[in-house]
Length: 226
Image (cartoon, rainbow, N blue to C red; front, side, top):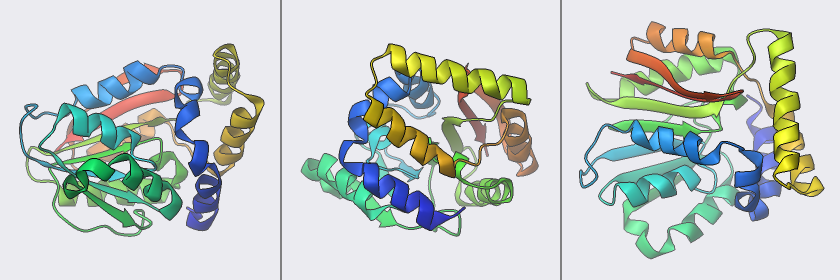
């Protein structure tokens, strides 16, 4: 991953990143709700969450509302994005930790759940494989990794359908030209892998109960338990 290029792309978009989310993710509600539903803890449980590529903290926000006793660590390469996340959680900062770092290189700690949304597709295949193994290592037995992300079509024809459908969907939802152009610019840093490969890499990393629980064209939610 060219962390500098990714950081630059997201630094530039940080100020208006959230406002176009529902337009740029046509399946927004199902996508995020599936990720939340996979967290295997009671709503009042106290547990530790690591959000990789947390950005402005959108996924962490949903988790914090559903699980008010969860402690959440947000990691992102963009300090500008994390500054937005700190603003979002300014009323309850004691529950949150913010770390500016390239998580593809290393992260430390022990967590009951590791989550990510629309970030890991910026990593090369080799980095994804290494990341999945490292995530496995920081989880306790029974811990879970949940990835809500975009995947590459299994063949060029399918990938073409994914891209054309997405562009038509976001235009139908009224996305502005500026927001679409910004998204397409960020997508230049994408290094997407197929769903099949990523599920296999999770299994190779010794994850169990590996499955894709939601799929809408390129948008998927998959997970593995330790």
